[in-house]
Length: 358
Image (tube, rainbow, N blue to C red; front, side):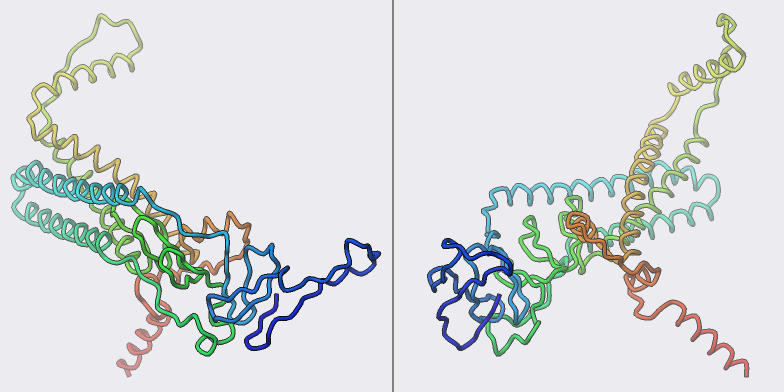
């Protein structure tokens, strides 16, 4: 592939391979009609290409052009947008229901145990609820991160290698770097896109990835707290089990004891108040949500530790790319907003402490 900025195009000859015998059908001269003169979208220079070159890279700016990629009509955009908004409303209502029902079912029993215990648990509930709701709103309604603007389109502006490995987004009509992906559900290019999450109705990218991880951490901690407290309160208000002998059964002693306790447990459910059924629902709902969000959080932290995103992991697997990223805990430290290594902060604190002692 060659490029030129001022010299006119004349003709291009196809060289023969060494060691091959010249044949009549192999000896030809390609005229200007046999090649394509294409203008690079990145720098504006003219390129001489073979007519069978759907994908090529500019030798000056490094921009990649793919003639097979074209803008497609998205007929289901508004359905996906409506689905995302419905998920957001349902999840907000679910979180408010968990908070309200938990306060109604748990805290009268907690305050009956001790006033200090009730105030302490009520404070913990307020902090966890506020943290979970605020991080969810930030992850759902904050921009996932648009790529920074870059100069393109003309040769004097774009330097050599200025658009290396950049593609052209036909949806947004602007350059797209290798770590930028276009989301059809959000109709925008997202920097460091991890995935599009319908449960927050938004993409997870450079702009809200930290808020998304903080929401997962807060949600896992909150559901763990709800499961522990609801189990404790349910145990406190559960009706006493009545001993029902089962002498009719002719099985082993262990099976007989288990059967007795099962029957007595089922009978005690009849005397359980409404608050008890709410506590049972809170326990099973919190445990199931805790398991699901815990697995997602672990997967996300593993990707951050490896310096990758979910989409970059998929693209590397599909392309057979075996590039080894730098796996380090400093990736986690930098992700959560600490520009310096943790060891540097600890050493500076230790040195300042020694200086004060002198």
